[in-house]
Length: 305
Image (cartoon, rainbow, N blue to C red):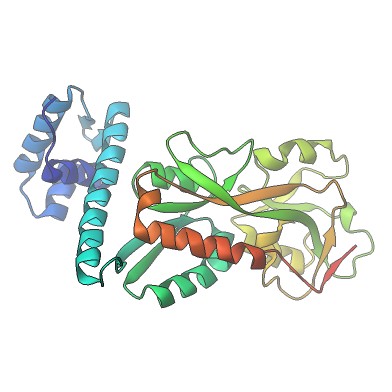
């Protein structure tokens, strides 16, 4: 196979993002015919059809999804290569400055409560780093999918036996958080209340425990995210079972009660590609995240036994 040039990789990524040749052409400042010609040339070099063309635009085939993910990751590595080389050339002997964008995918509670202090220290030590945080729901491919698709350099993800680090990525656990019963303060029988839940909450790491609890009803109220769940519980609409990271800054009117010694937990960690794991910016962020993990456990004066 003849190698693809960087500009061909950029065109593949642009077509996938725009879902059309005309949209990619507009984004890149090219003509549609030039984009179409480049894609056909790339398909010929690779030996596979990468896009389904039709009235609805251009949709990546399965081969195209794979090729585009590789294209994004290669283009990102080229950017990192240049940034790190310039940083080494500009720094004192044996050192390197770290600069440029650092793309992070995180689910809501991690983006709100785990990342900010780590990023504060990171940017204080490396002012040239520009964090770009994207909130992604931790369902389906989740944050790990963003890394696999080349849209993020590092993802904050749920990790465990039911949610392992994808084979193509590397990662590590940052903290273990406990689940707790959350209910209106002072309620005499909180376990009798309706259940308020959200889609990201009960996945494989708690499913077995959840199914074994006869007192937990089917959710009668479903919210968009954990913040909405807390708001509903604070207004007396029900109780919830929530992980610790979601309970930072819980509103007034809520009481947090332990679920006992058999309570479920979930592991929060980071995932990245083997190549990005060696980059200066990602390594620096991982160091700060590991330093943050001791302070990430929820300590709430409203928690009761």
